[in-house]
Length: 580
Image (cartoon, rainbow, N blue to C red):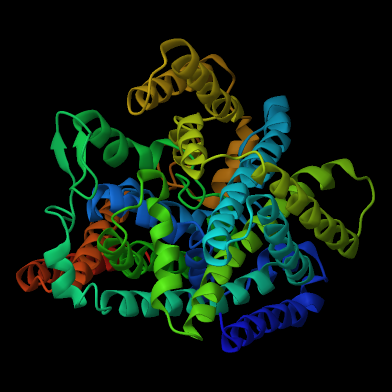
């Protein structure tokens, strides 16, 4: 690290704090400004903020580990979520913006009735806003600790102090500026993060030991460049060989996980900070465009610089053990960047870390204020709520740091979140399209996976995918039975929800025969062709990077064809038009 590196870091932190200060006055007016930016974000600001939030300090490290163990195909462990993301774009984004609520948990208030709904709202605010939110921030903190340890040789017992300092800095500018500050710092931080990632890929792949893309292709093991997993009798594959999935694993990852489980940034039916960004946009059209942009940028464009570096680490650091393969990315930063660019790359990691943590703090605080505090406090003002929101942001910071000290592995948290949420996804989807879903459906679907998780882990001692299938089946049966045995939501509540949201699907008892012909078929085909278009863009870019020109042509043809078919059904169904 040279003086120029430290100057770059100082400039980055200065700009970040300045943005927070700039928006602090507007954020302090009321909680609508503080948590939703006054509902006036353009699609490209909201969409970029979504992408930046999902780009955390752990993301390049996780991709490096996946590629090191299973080649490029290892990324299907998260690429499969594109289908769920596109589902949000076309089936839910318009509804979230139309709901005119502050948090996704507030949907419970306008969708359900009775004592079950009164319990569900604060329960989910605590469960998602504090418990799951703290787990997410914990693993992001842990990833930053891994980076600092390798880059600066900081002793293990001091890492939490450095991360605590970074966390405090983020909490301060988030508490000042609210969502507007978060969104615009996300924009700035994302540009920095991607610039650093691209520069690192260029320097590493063109190093003497690699010799460009051609040299990399020659040096890699067979199958490492395959885009698709192979389906076999087992999931065991030696390092850097193509991912081999058992039929069960394939069905779990590709066919079920994306719609069945809750996962931050990829919730079935939207939700979380993705819903927050959609609700903060100017109108329904901006909500749709923002999520469509997010899916394409997140899955198609952003991963390739990380994948290139990850492949290079297989050649540069063959001595790394399976437990340390993710650190190859940080080692490449340390070994192959000149002075000045090291500071930029470190800033890019800090930017990725801060963009994720800032969103998690602001979003988690919105649950505490809107879904807990407002229902407890008897007297409050708009500015008083903002003051409490700022305090709750700092409290969440402390909680996340405490959780960080208890987390041993990032992958362990991922697995826990996936499996402890298996089964709830279908309820989160159907609550928009089937009137019979009630508050008990969500309560049971949220709690049942924990019971199933305990049974599989402590009684049967099953591992993924067997444990996932059991939890999913157990939870689904539980909530369906619970739904049919409990009373439906009050008719007046359902009627008012239908009049506000105007959902399609099975709402016949509340349409009075006046509902227009369903547009779900056109929306469905938009979804299908948008998925095909996005995957084609992803593999077209990969084929161009690795100079596989025939493959690039094939993916390009599929992508262009999918785009025109997507546009045809979008126009036919008036998907992007504003509706009264």
